[in-house]
Image (cartoon, rainbow, N blue to C red; front, side, top):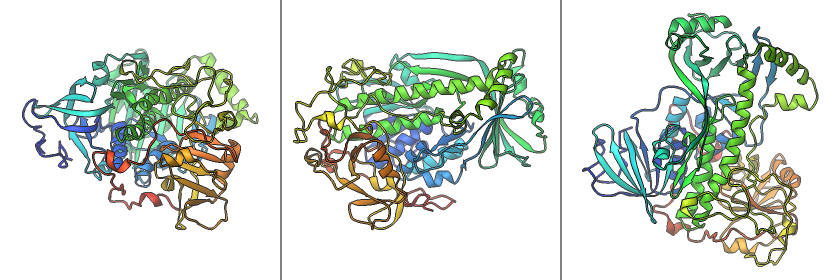
Length: 622
């Protein structure tokens, strides 16, 4: 890829020169700073909407050092939305077992990834440079996305209409200015954007540093495809399979170690020889020293600028969720930016980004820290108790299931955020639209933690745009709002077998589990409907057949018959049988979609590659 994509508008230059110093502004809907997994996912999501996007990346090439080593089914579901899941899975390892082993190599706890209903394998190991290349190839499908490599944003200046970015070309020190309506800063843990905004990065950096070793596997050894956390108090280690013929180890730098020596081939071969791995079985590609962090940006939003990925938070790697958290960030944010830029929703909805993402990423981090303590504790007395007690707990019904099914990653449920809720004595929740206090949640609810107090008392709605005059108290009995619906295989109206999201299409949608109840408020807003038919039904227009009964069982569990789905498949509102939905969000209007974007939406076929690829609607069809 050229330093500035050839898709750039006239005057930007394809040689990286960037035009004359300080010359002519270029206008975009969204600027994305940083082109790692978070930034490139954002570019794909925004590119598919037809918005005009520019990506700024300081480096000329993909970072060659593998950092993330795994992802999960929810993230694969996000990449399915951009038409890349099937291609990405070709370079991944799925459903590999996981063992915690003691100093003698005996497993005291084994975990088996359990699907959560997102339509993809629950855990997949990856090789990050290869993953990023596929995601970048995906961006090339979108002529409305410009990619400026070897360019760094040195200054941001916000005003009422947008953000002015001063950009320097690192190849020749050229300077350009451009404007964007909004900015996503995905420029990493040392984010220059976060520093310019004077946003604190609160938390801690662990004293222990770790050597991360990437190797090419020359001669496989027994069980090389099992992930092992080697919980040896003498020197803990991570022993991890990675795809495309790679294998990875991680070792702590202990007191008295020579850090520089530990990155040499001699030291690495000595450390892995403890596990029976000889010099003829691996080729050492690189060894890098990393520190582990637990940090959160004080704010995820400052006016028109949003922090995402490591720029917003950092966690230790023990449950493989650092990269995944950044992908979830932009999946939550990008559809909201699109809706606001098209005039479909008010600007205040953007405050829900932090209210929804920060509590979840904090809980994920808390669990990562907990798992890390199990792995890295070096106190002999503690590790002896651990090695003896956990196998016993592993035999206790109920406890064993929680330990073994690897449900350590919390399910995202938006207790606070952009969803319907019963009216309370404090009039519910709204989002402050003031740029100087972005992200604030009013009405006595926390802006960074989910509500955990006893349920609020409900009152009938005094007004409503649905025209039904029905109390929201009745609708509030459902537990569906704030949850993401599962993604089973369904039969589409044309008779094809597809995953549900390929029919939902990333849009606002009313999903009916029974003959539809009229929803005039939602219909006036332009929200289409889809009916879920029971297994065995014939395909029908405006309906999907729930092939395995998953959706209808989920609706029953949550006491809901009708759902109002957001574009990210989270439930905005729900109602039981015969009850009208609560009103749509204030300002929701989908009738002018074709006229409010800078460019019309474009199709998102999978990028061509040496491996075969499938259309988004047929990814992974068995």
